[in-house]
Image (cartoon, rainbow over all chains, first blue to last red; front, side):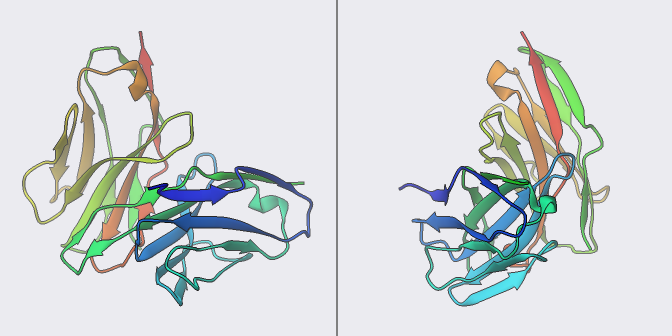
Length: 116
Length: 115
C-alpha cells in the first residue's frame, strides 16, 4: 500500500492564482482531512470528510474548497491564493470500527505552498 | 471548544536518558481519544501512541509510554532510553469519541537529543 499520497510536494503561487492540492489514499479509509501547519500553531483543520459525497468545515475553512467524489480522493482547492495561505498542508485519512474504536490518522508527506 | 496545551515549546535530553513531554487538554466530554504524534525533520507525521479515555491503563509502545490523568486532564509522554532518532517535534492531539474525524492538536514540543 502507498498509504496517503499528496502532490505536489512544493508549489509557489502568485497572489490571486488558483490551484488544487491532490490527496489520495489506498487504505479504503472512510475519513479524510486537510490541515495546515504554521510555525508555533500546530496543525489546524481546514476541511474534513466522513465519506464520499460528505464534507464539512473545520477550524480555518475560508479560502479553501473541497469535494469527495470517491473514497480514495480528497482534493483541496485554493480559489484565489493569498500570502496568508503560505503554509505546509497535510492530508490525513483514518477509519473507525463502528462507534467503538478509532485508531488515529495516517498522514501524507505534506505540501509546502508559498504564495508571493 | 476543546483545547490542547503543550506548555514546553522546547525540551532537551541526553542520549540514553528519559524525558517527559507535557500535555493538558480541556474538555467536558467523558469519552475521547488522546494521541501523541512525532514529526521528524522529514516533515512526516507519525503516530506514536494512542490512549482511550475510558481505559485506566496507560498506553505503552516500546520505549514510549504515557501518564494519563483523566481527572487532571493531563496526558504526558515519557520517552525512555532516548535515541538520536527521537529528535523531532511532538504533538499531542485530542478527539471526542463522537466527533467523526476531528482532531484538535497542541502547538508542539521540539525535542533535541544530545549525543
